[in-house]
Length: 73
Image (cartoon, rainbow, N blue to C red; front, top):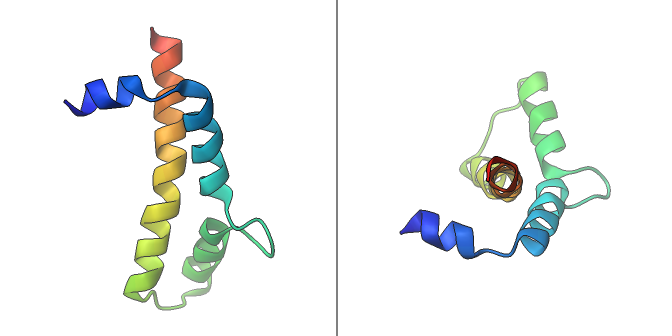
């Protein structure tokens, strides 16, 4: 069922909005870059930080999955 729903997503907007959400907010720095720097510096993660990582990663994962599904057939 989830595959059928995923296949119905239009490719262009799915990839564009997924990639955009992956890098948002652009200024001052993307959340995922900020969280990676927090991990590198040893700053403790609060639950909201983990939620931020999951939510912003999901857009990129969906965009890449849609792109790969287009290449694979």
